[in-house]
Length: 466
Length: 57
Picture 1 (tube, helix red, strand yellow):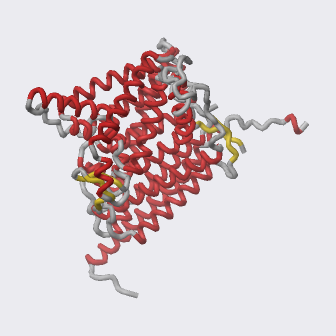
Picture 2: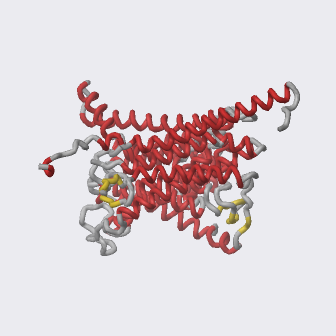
Picture 3: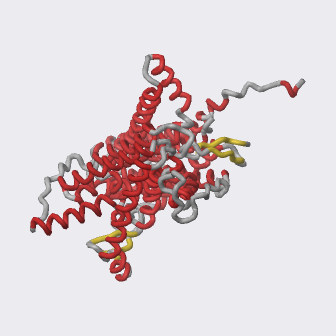
């Protein structure tokens, strides 16, 4: 049987599955139900409330946290941001030939979540805006002989600025730049200008509220990549690198700062929309575009308005499904307030956000990184005038991944992400409901949420881009 | 002749989503059933304590 699959961003291949794609959704649902019963029967005490942080070998801290390494990482990040902006503004307008597009939207945007989920908050060392702000802050302290005074950050906003920024970033990539036919359809010039604007905005916010405060609350990439780093078994405490129980840090991430739930929901929804735009939503999008066109709206505005409506609807849909699960939990006697529950279980969506990211972008990442480290590195502007490393004539080997392998990775990622989400939610329920029977009962609805997200994710992946 | 017969399956793909909704509906139905059964049992237990303990068989 042949199915055309959207490998995210219009990379389409044929696969030959032994059973229909929808049967994978049924099998995944059965695995989730079995996992739920296994957790209910065997997991009776919370395990993730304490990180159990242990100091790693001292040389790791000495080497990785040393000034030369920090300067090297920060300097490299600033240099690459500069190359990206320059290539975007002065390079070719062909998105697939310009260093900026692949570097910003694939290497960094998809690469850092993968790395963060394994090694911890790596982006902190490679954050170019943090590096610039630290140098500027140091220079100010030296010249003015006093540290720069900052405003108090309005804590009621929490991580909401980052959630809005995350939606804005994906909107720019998927809606504003929806030209189709290439991996990322945004014009490099627009990406370069957007990077300049974001750099100015971020540095201004860091000057206003302080570099570390803004990185923890409002800086989109620090918050987004930091969210995935909560799953990792490594972290830095008091300037020292140590190991901790994997997933355990996530339990506090969502409850400690407001707006964290919005960040996770935005993450899942934007990835879903990106996957659905050329597949599951295609017919409906065309219908709305036709209707807008008949109403006299211009062709480009028509596409952007329709995409924006569907992206907003996806965010609302994901939020509603999650909040319905929370509402169901609240019906169990002894439940805390709705808001507390909504915030308390948001961390269980982080593995799902990562699973969606892997499922939708894994193949794109493997393909585009071949371009990143060959012809885009040798000819960053894409003007065929330079060949810095002698790899400008290389191409992408699309046979590097078999279509069936991609599908199995996608299914495995979605399934693992949802089982981990279910485990985190069950563990948290044992904190709110000391009685494990009530805790298990409260998780009936989270099981429904997980099954719904799994089937939705697999449906998005299985719909062919015709 | 048979080779010329075309099954009108062009629009079948539009209904594939139904197969993905079925597991969700089954799980939700199971949850509603279990929740109702547990609530009923709790009510019966409460009723039992109100009028004295239930006689054991």
